[in-house]
Figure 1 (spheres, rainbow, N blue to C red):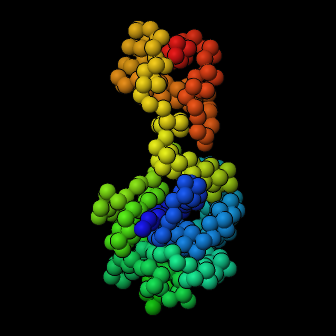
Figure 2: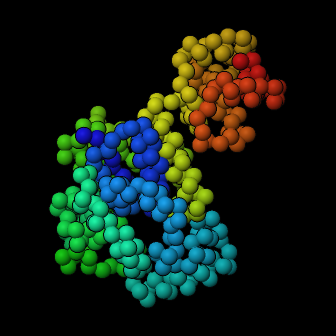
Figure 3: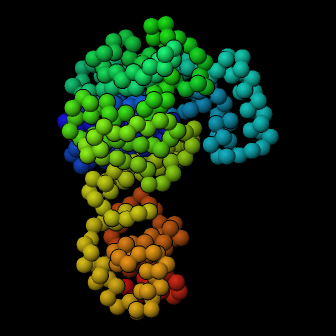
Length: 343
């Protein structure tokens, strides 16, 4: 069996839907899903077969509405602004939070109720699990759907997402709960312990405790190759970029594509040895020292990426090394460009 473990990370969770669609594109069947925090929500939707609906959710999400904060405050926070407007909005929101003893979860509860995930999840043959922490004894709970009554599914998803910034309310069985990230932010072990042969673990590199995997050989780890931004950055452009990044990062891993900052079609070492055959010994020596490598394949890829980064190439594409060289050749005659001109 093959599983998908989804980490917590707020707005960064958009990356995970891109990962899922890449796995789907590669015809990789996922038998079970498990998640922490926002990963628990994503996992529940995917296990229910509602991937297209989840994609639409991420493309239209409004964090200000969900958290009960103003659009102005969220926009200015995510853009790292510091001005009078931010201070004013911040003070007003802070007063509201203090009077409520934390952020309200009413809007999130309403969203979960409206989605009615239980209606489709319990009809699905896919496994679904989540992680949360019971506050009174700090006991971590790994729960699969067979242990979660359908009428309490929304409560457990909310419990897995429950950060201390929210108003402390008793959710399930007269208990308080904490975000699952306080114990296990990338809960792949839940699937490994259930007997899964392979687990794709999507780490959003957010704050949280990451437990060692019980069997590293059964894990395929997927991490963002670039920064996903703030956990509160729900800017639609950034969300869509993160979805695409999740897709391309996963395609790179599954298809074993080349590249570091960008993605290249696979070419053997002899191809890159052939590319540098006409490069002068002086230039070759300079470039190998500059990029700190003696390997021709690494050298050419790093040189191309160096120029592509400067010229702001789109990193959400799969490139042919030959076509990139052809486009760059002759642009300039110094430095790394001189090396590429000789390829």
